[in-house]
Image 1 (cartoon, rainbow, N blue to C red):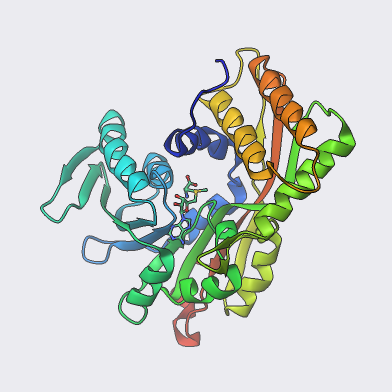
Image 2 (tube, protein in one colour):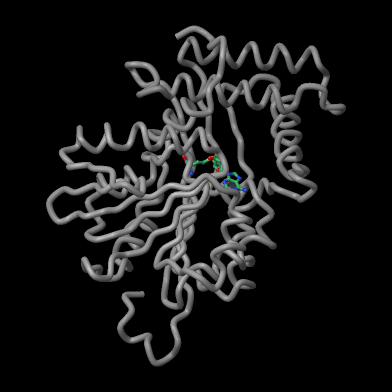
Length: 320
Ligand SMILES: C[S@@+](CC[C@H](N)C(=O)[O-])C[C@H]1O[C@@H](n2cnc3c(N)ncnc32)[C@H](O)[C@@H]1O
């Protein structure tokens, strides 16, 4: 494909799915699946996903056949992304052999074999959602994929943890952890300057007057979970490694790479520590390397699974 003329976050998230599928840490995933409590029609597993985007994680859980009875609440601040989730999920589910129907409350019921999943979506900022739900509802499992590096974790994480019942689980896959590398190396010094400035831009991001980013969220998550009174149950790396094989880049990953380069170029335009002309030629060269199937992209990330301690007397029944 040639360099895209326009970029779309929906397409980026869709293209990211196959990259995530390869990257997700298998050991952490297995630990999650093993720790899921038994669910029944009367007591379905209550799952909350924050920053759910276009719903690729619910697709992954359905495809893996690891849920039996569950209600899945997917929230995101971007209504457009949830609209896309609601468009693609029924289509995807039918292709996978699920029966799908939507009830009058707008919930999607998805059924296949022993899986009975009810999915609801809400476009809302996570801070507003937490304030509204605090003391009202709790969930058995909270998921935040590629999400925590976009918020102020020290202030947000304790409130997120309080939405999980004692004995419940938190799963934070694809959490960025401070490594961005492109091959082939160009001017190694300039490559390093780009990485440093890009990470610095994440660290300094402010939204609505609040800090909202940390380029080393993954490693900082350990201490932040401990402060929130939550135990880390499993952790491992989930690096993105994107490269062209003999048939080129898989799925829509060529677009994914163009989007990443475009995002970095846009974020760093006008950066006082980078020469503007060199940045333009770096961006141009990286796009050309993608067109030639030469670019390799590696981003370092971590997956963490955590558990809210159950009261002492109730622990023996838990699976973790
Ligand atoms: C990098 S995307 C990841 C989306 C999805 N989890 C995935 O992995 O494909 C981050 C998502 O978090 C959402 N988001 C960011 N800040 C948020 C906030 N304060 N409240 C709710 N959603 C937020 C964005 O709209 C976006 O969909």
